Length: 236
Ligand SMILES: Nc1nc2c(ncn2[C@@H]2O[C@H](COP(=O)(O)OP(=O)(O)O)[C@@H](O)[C@H]2O)c(=O)[nH]1
Ligand SMILES: [Mg+2]
Image (cartoon, rainbow, N blue to C red; front, side, top):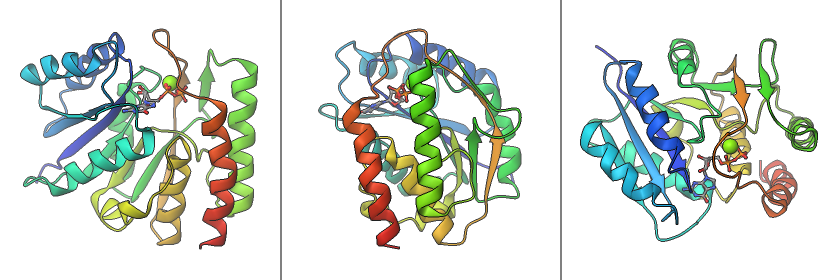
């Protein structure tokens, strides 16, 4: 039986990037692949563009009323994927800004045959970040170091957003208990999967900073990570 795959991408002001991403993903010609786009009423019209793309490709679009954050965007898409009549075997999440190369999707899927959760990793051998300013690099490196240390997790890239879940992992994560609004969501899902004893693997990726649009990374999102990681540890 051919595996069913759902690729989830959250969007906020990705009007120029989303069509390129979608074309690259479907050009891979992976059988049984569908997408879910979660748009937070982007002022640049990304939601309408997603609807246009959905006429041509196997895409479902979730429209939310406003910018409600990355964590809840993923949760709404995970729930849609898990409640579908035709449930996917693997759920991949990736950014819409072309920082994550769709060409890696087959590698994630190959690794997912023997692992429950596969992390696209910038911080293992052959992984890279490109065009990131030194401050952003430092924040990411430190964030990963801090999370690894506090949570005692053995993975090198805990904050990345390019991941592949076996369906059972998401079914057992208790999605409603995930509380992070921002990027800490990535740490939270990996940490919970680890606590439940799932096998987690990393494959190297090159993260290329976006050329178009703006990053939504900010101080508030960064600070959320610092205290939420402590909470994650205490509530183990
Ligand atoms: N739906 C939704 N998507 C978001 C939100 N914040 C960020 N994104 C999307 O999440 C992905 C990663 O965000 P980005 O700003 O590029 O983060 P960075 O790569 O860490 O600088 C992109 O596809 C964004 O459009 C949000 O509040 N809601
Ligand atoms: Mg980005």
